[in-house]
Image 1 (cartoon, rainbow, N blue to C red):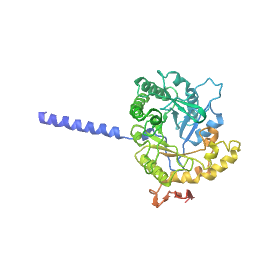
Image 2 (cartoon, rainbow, N blue to C red):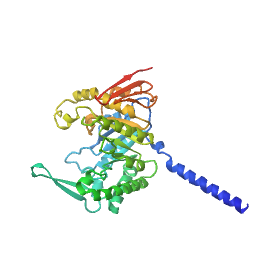
Image 3 (cartoon, rainbow, N blue to C red):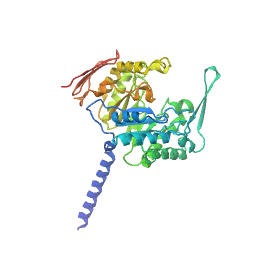
Image 4 (cartoon, rainbow, N blue to C red):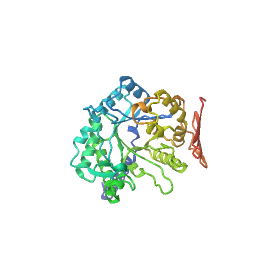
Length: 390
């Protein structure tokens, strides 16, 4: 072969290889995503496992959901168990019943959770301690992970690897990932300069976790928020190093503006079109009363009836912006008994794929699906879903 021909072949091979590598890097992880369908409303569930569920409750979760996040939840005061082992037992119970299920392990990246006893015991060195004076002279003490330290990054990413290799989960749900953003918890407690350094370290920690978890595993972070006026979006910069996010605050306490809600719906849609998983957390209107304890004695069946009455607005807002790999999650709390083990008639109705993006007129949105027409008025916080079987 002539020298010129050899050089040409080498150059062609290099270009082809470079292109192939580039294509591989850009290829989405959708082949390891939960199995998605427009046949019905795509739903996800997110709740605290505590010390485990009853067999019939595992049956319910496995039957109704393919995408599940297990948080630590509440443990009995005399419990000697740890969130890690209870989560592992629950993940195996669910996946034995539903092999298609993708189960995420809750793993906070900003501060320790008391229930994660195994991981906490291995934390290297000391936490960053912040003390705040509260009304009445009481002091609030907060512990933060010092993620700027290499040994802490290694500890955290090792625990993420354990979540999939040891505790039978398909990935991690990273709560508090945005703690270092301007105005966030680290900024408020530790100052802007320290928070910025910690935020930079967060990206390195997530990348290390990805490598240790190995291929085919998921990283979903919380939170992803929209924007309004001087209030900038939250979390978008973390999407490139993760597989998606949760929108955790949509109309949570009914104090958000129409601008914020519209931009949050848009943020969800844009992220999903970029082939990310988005979990859209909807809340019933009575959440404030529930959190204040005013409804703690209300029978569960009555609370559920109220939640059924309130589901239309958040569900319609979700459907306005939903794309493939978007999931609706609807409860009035994070414990299993606060809606995670309940079902809604809307989830059984045929939906079908969208016929296009929503049409916006002012603060109203309308979107057509194969078997449903969705209408939302953000200004008046009203919505309607017309279902059909055509």
